[in-house]
Image (cartoon, rainbow, N blue to C red; front, side):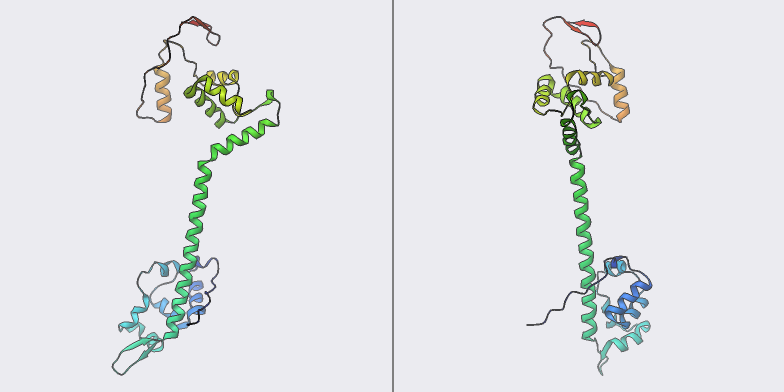
Length: 241
């Protein structure tokens, strides 16, 4: 069984090496011959070396004047002008490249993990704020409950889309989660959400659409039941029915 080489240890910031720092690294890991080769080939950063898809050692298979001295030292030469890169140099270079790719892959995996964590945090940002708001209110008197802007927007949406029964069901089963009806009605009034029967508010709708940059607005049929009795609206001091 062939012995296994231990992985080549490289600095944590090796991917940023360039210029003299890069050449010094090549000299330490692969030898002076490869350092000179990198200089001739204008490969002066780790990033450039990793971007090369083809094996750069294939340059020894052709006779380049600029590489004559390097080829003489790095290769074995036969009488028929056939040359072969010295096996020890090949092993040193392959080990170096393998270590660089390992560090690069590890860096990519870490970056991907961080991005996934950021996405997860962004996906649950409201849920976190919602739970924090609940815990904050549980240690207070009911008269001192406070709600963040995100929670208030959620409460308004819940009431508008789900109705009063759904809203009260959530409020009673999650103490401190959403505001009481008087507080909600006050916030809706400040937001201009007080809707009167038979009142057309095209200007408000137009301003809202313009402020959010909506190009298209979709209207659905009003599915509310006909009011069977006269009711008094204290907010507007009017009778409806």
